[in-house]
Length: 273
Image 1 (cartoon, one colour):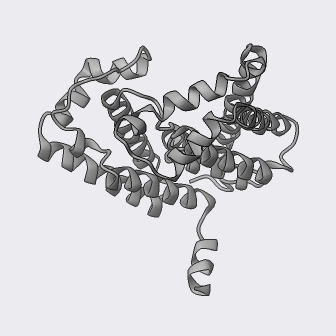
Image 2: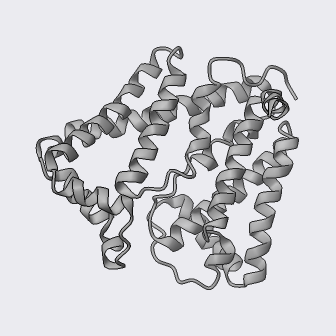
């Protein structure tokens, strides 16, 4: 066990992130969410994002999913690209290829499944590796960190500026809609029982909504200092786990980018490659 921990500690910070990305992708594939599982599936909703339309107008997702064997090759290729990147973290070309493969993967699964519950962090976290010089990578890494802070902080401000915080039944209605498929399919697990309890106690439900909003709002501290980054990372991980428990929003796909908060207090790229 000590040898395993020692080997992990010897990894470069971004190698640990790539390992988390690969783990997240592997969990998705094993859960039945991948190119192979979606082949020949009909479109549901690809949204209005121009990045999505760029891939679909080129016909790439359609081509990949038209044949089961091609889809399987792309699933395997994605895992291999991330594996090679883990051992060649300085390879800019490999980072770009991995990023494009992950973006295609994300665009495809969200377009075919018809929702955006899958977080995009596992794609965005590769952006710093796509630059050649160490200073450029460090600059992009810091920019991505500030974007991540803005992502959560703006979400909290949006909740504060709306009338939702004054509506006692606002969050109860959301929770009821989120778990409606479970009730229709008669899947009564512990989360469903928790959902039933919260629906019958709107005051407690609203308190949880406010706690979640405050957890997002605390990221504003990160704009002024990095001393509390580790605590912000822990807070946001708890926030996502809570979202999964209460709202069935999958946290897989965003844990890897949250790991940035655990390594952002020191130089990540100390030399030019």
